[in-house]
Amino acid sequence: DPDSHRSLCMDDAPLLREPDQAPSPATYPSLLQAVGLLLLAMVLQIVIGTGFTLLFAGEEGLLRIPSLWALVNLLSLGPVILYAWRRAGGTLDVLRLRTIRRDLVVPIVLCVVGMGILVSELDNVAHMIIGPPPEALDFSWMFMGDSGQLLGLVFLLMVVAPVTEELLFRGLILRGLLSRFQAAPAVVLTALLFAIFHVNPWQFLGAFLLGILFGWFYLTFRSLVPCLLGHAAANGFPLLVSLAFPSIPGFSLVTDQVQFQPLWLNAVGLLLAIIGAVWLRGGGWTTGGSASR
Image 1 (tube, rainbow, N blue to C red):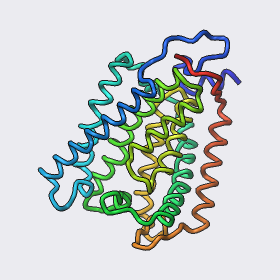
Image 2: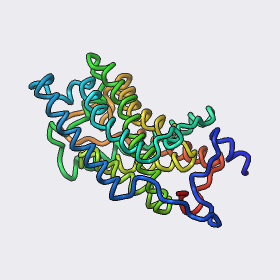
Image 3: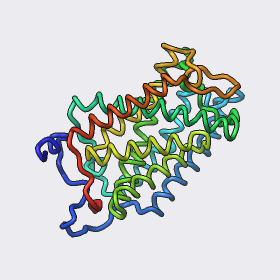
Image 4: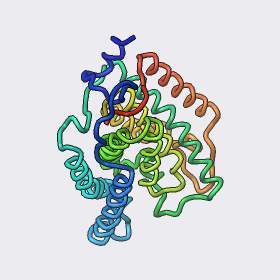
């Protein structure tokens, strides 16, 4: 009912335009501008990452030092986010950092964890089809709970990456695309840019599907907070499992050979995703027609 929907978040300002509402001016960025932001972020990440590798990482490689990689992420995405935010209006309301009901945290996490398990199996399928990734693009070690790098990994995976990536992709890019496209294509296009940003064909489909899920959260709750929470959960769950259960084939146990997850784990992932999605949908949400401008 309308009252239950209104209570989902503390601010009920419309994200989606009702059919009888007149369109308002489109907001920054457009699709072309979003592609430009993506390319700028990727170029900055390459340049700054190369510099940090030469100065600090050496033969170990930047990706093996998560605290440095977190700094590269902040220095490369930070200026892009700041520029886009100023172009979009430069107010806190632009980012939609509005709180949600506490009882919705559990279904959000369940939905993300379940999807994450299924996405992990899709990654295994990709490895089988196109072979294992080269060492430079093999990020699986990040989720294996290296005790010597644990604090850096937690900071990178559960704080820096969710904040910077969600601010850019859902907070700014999706907001701009929603002023130009219907909700579904806007979410899909944003998820596509999100997947491209990860520059890893072995994880492309997984990043794309999670991007769609985070976009759904943004539309459902009219807030970036569930996206931040979901992104942190998606990155943190594999790390937690690898510490507690390091020998699950295809999930927490990494070998040179392609392995698939146990059927029971895939069943658990599917069940959690369904329970979380049904629980959230039962909370009362609408996506309406066209997006507000």
